[in-house]
Length: 348
Image (cartoon, rainbow, N blue to C red; front, side):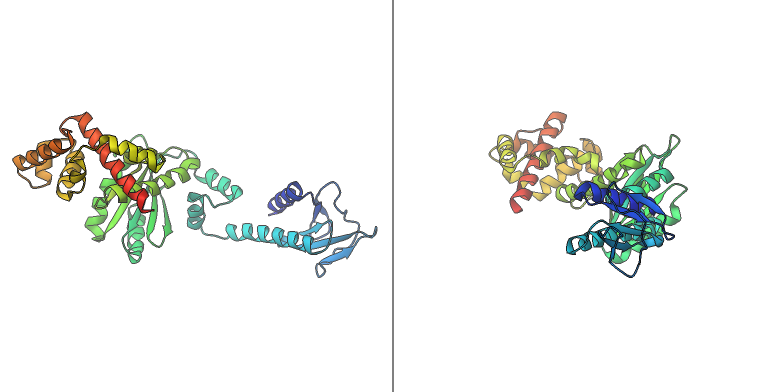
């Protein structure tokens, strides 16, 4: 706490030029700027202002741990600075009293102070390879069930953090001998296990595989982006991976006017009609999920092969894009992304 108080007083000096000093309970000097008052006087913790032997007036501020700060000046301005210093010190003390889970939550969203962040990094930093996921329940009263399940299946090094009333962050430790090929592969396995055990509705967002504790916050933010773009592009899906939406993230940064212009270049006469046809769009999405494989798609959709081919031909006739060819499939994917981004931006 002493180091933190001194750090705060230094920042006051840098920001305002006000000289300060800090004294221990027995009156010994802990810290002093160049023109701060010396300790050749008696500090009364019951007074805000005291008079030094030289006649200078100072503002006295009792702090945690028996430490007293002294500001070289008096009046309303100095009382305000004293109040700010006390708030900064007390907020740090409060943070130290938080549970580990709450500290991790603040760390993930970038609101934990640098000193406590370094302490967490020291605790978990070496080595740190993990899959970063968030599990979001459709109803807040199911979040405890998700958390309890994760705690039951977690191992050494795994971190479980309740982010809010509707979501839980799960950081699963992984390594060279891990049985999963990727964070997304792990998410699919996790989804099946939870669904079978709990029978609840939820979504998994995949931030990726993080290789440094210091990057954990950035990967957690990727989970949020995956959820936002996933809900926009595929609202019925249950697993959203950030890597699948990197193209959408790049395009979303483009101004609406430019997006609309790009969309117009891809739209043929009948393309707009196809984009409004939920049956054909659903077929195209399923075809993409099955890696442009007609047999796999017809099986997953319980659809006759000829019916699937008929629908793909209908899309080609309207858009000029044969989805059985990779480049055309990529162009159609771009077309649908642009369409949804333009619609989404127009609604805002």
